[in-house]
Image (cartoon, rainbow, N blue to C red; front, top):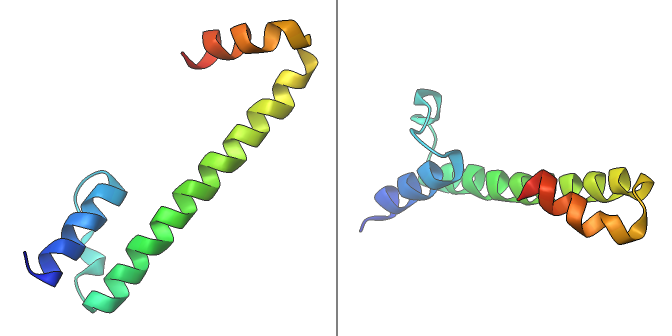
Length: 74
């Protein structure tokens, strides 16, 4: 698999679909950077969401937090 195809595949995975046309003019290095930034942003978003949920569940009595979390998020 060529570097371009690998980068395109990585971007599709990070974006969850088709790579937007506006990225066509970027070099492979720039596209790789975009993929890295997307990955980091998703990780940060996930961590911040987890923190927000934990903070929100602080109003729930401690013994009920785990069951409430399971009910809310499966």
